[in-house]
Image (tube, rainbow, N blue to C red; front, side, top):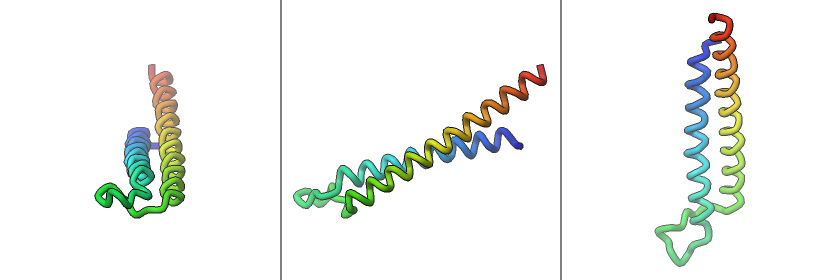
Length: 81
């Protein structure tokens, strides 16, 4: 197992998930604003909420990848020392 690759993949997943959460939150905030078309997203609130849940779960999964890689790295260091 390449620990640095797992860490990089996990961090990348966290960053993508956080970007997705931010977009979903923006879509939720902009949904149903016909009085301010420049703020309206045109997305359904339910779709945006579903996207928010998906991104939350993806971020949580990526966090677990980072935690697992951290544990493996710690174990390798303990064995090596």
